[in-house]
Length: 301
Length: 321
Image (tube, rainbow over all chains, first blue to last red; front, side, top):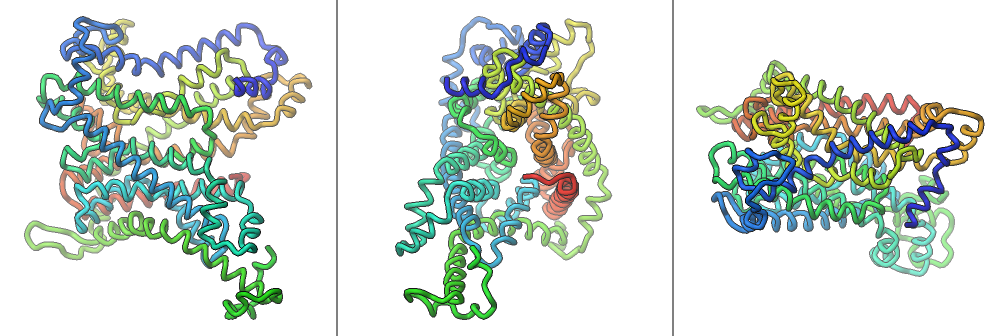
């Protein structure tokens, strides 16, 4: 409600522009068209999660068909239908990787961002630029080399092979340091130092409470980044009980074309639906709190 | 803050002043300098991880790209042979050209759509702006794997509803996975995935343009289009430049969408469709690790070079951000 009032307050009333009434109708119509384009795949996956494999291909994609198989399809998510792994286990893996990777990335970014933003140690500027320049390197150019290193040190098919690199977030360090520069005043830290507090104590008791909005931002970006990651887990995991959802669904897609189980298409559809519902729900809830800086970070994930 | 600009004489005095009541100016400088040095301990954990999982793989890729492994004879130093092979590979370059063509269409089209809607919402010209903004943003919550699976079904040449639609309106030969339409198809999927996100960033930026500036122009009789093109657009220029830059890096990594589409339509997408698919299929599929490492290094250098050039242009433009 408050957000809506702010919306109106910052907008010049449209009658001032002297627009023809038709303009509003046309523009709103274009919004409707783009909404249809945006929602069509979502509607399709909801509708088709209720169908049998035959009906997914034979009935019209944007309407329901008997029999209603939603609950049967849903129950398949808890079984190893194809001998390729169980969806619910992949869901658990994804949650585990996302939480460990996200929390780790947030801790390292908080410490690093604080160090870069509030200390002028020797070489701090150069080091910071080196960290920033890592944003320019495409992730895919690092992933295959990472695999080659893993092959040497035995991190293939290890959850740490997935979790540890997810903890390295140059964009998180960048966001935290910009956030700290704005919201953790030097004077406050200096005052605490005069009082004789140690640096770790100052960081934990004074800085961290002021950094909470930034920490939440970095945590969300990192969690979403791990949740959506496909390339790294695809190449480092060959055991299906380690797959995250993305690799499991990709594997089902591959199997579906090469004579997998007769129920693999409904599995793919219901699996896709169950993957996106919690994410969409979370995004809709936190959307109004998102600032553009937060959004910017997620492209590189 | 002036304490930080310390004289050379202060160096070497660290520690000698700890605990004194009123240190001299020189001594204060050393104290401050010593305290600033403690920042190293805060950045160290990140830097260790950074070195292990970013610098090490890059370094190892460069090292291993200079070797060749043969079934008979093992691994031996081969200089730039892998780079020569990458540079002479038609498959690698056709992937690069394809991604450049993809980016050249996808990024401008998406940004124009995103800017149009962001402006309409910002000016309040579209009704139900909040609702539409939320809807447009939804695909951002959909992982690329799931998005690609959905579009593969929707566009299926035999049963896809969008194929049936094309047939119904007269394009009886329409096949979204034909060699002419496959890149435009991926462009459409990427537009679906990313327009709402780019729109949100532009919308937030437009919101920060001071209301008074717009009001004054409107009262002076400026038309809507004049307000948009002469006031709003220049004020979010730096954000647009940054979005171009982020989207170029994103496009250079094009991988998930074509790989998932290729599971559904193997004939439409070759193993070397994009540079990243090339690296994946050479390295993981073909186990030619040295060659794949060389290709990864080349891809990294290409993207960094493009970024540096565009950053230089941005600086020259009117550097902001």
